[in-house]
Amino acid sequence: DRVEAKYKGGSKWYKGEITRVNVDGSYNINYDDGDQERRVPPSSVRLIGGGGGGAGSSRTSPRRGGGGGFDDSESDGGAAPKLGDRVEAKYKGGSKWYKGEITRVNVDGSYNINY
Image 1 (cartoon, rainbow, N blue to C red):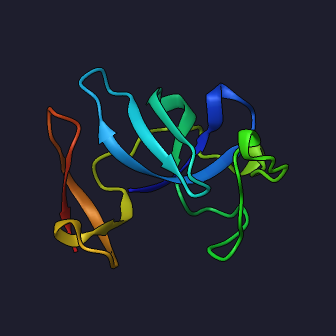
Image 2 (spheres, helix red, strand yellow):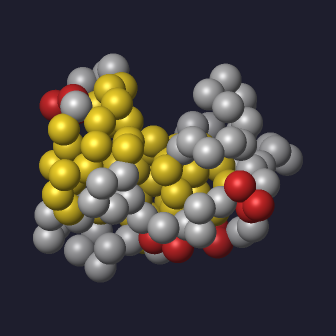
């Protein structure tokens, strides 16, 4: 899923993609600038949307020299995606994003989505 996450627990939000949901509920994230981070707690991850820089903005994590970030005042509290949330996801792992709704949160941290 496309998300914003607080790189290394910092205060700014950076765009990336969840590559794995770990058994403990944390996430592995590949940031858009190429940085990667493992075991990011759910409190440091939010779905993309609700403001920020918009789909065309380019944000890089601090390690890559970027100074941009997202305003915490636009945060939904950092909650992990949950049942009933409207999301965008890649159908069967393809390259195109489709709008849908989470209909089930599975015990392994994956989701069932109605597109």
